[in-house]
Length: 75
Image 1: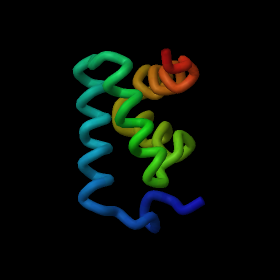
Image 2: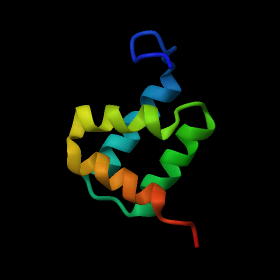
Image 3: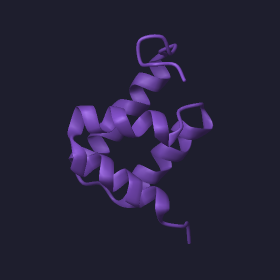
């Protein structure tokens, strides 16, 4: 897997990650966070890539929240 420095960065991915960070910081509903995660995953950023970046930027609580959201099945 490519690391953060070699993975191509686009304006879209930077924007999506910022939206994710803001959603987590402001305790947005799980549905909002999950929609961002699904979009990131569809565009080539799997949870294994996203979770460590969230942990680095926002800490363990935010990364654990993502793990719980991803385990919860959609209604």
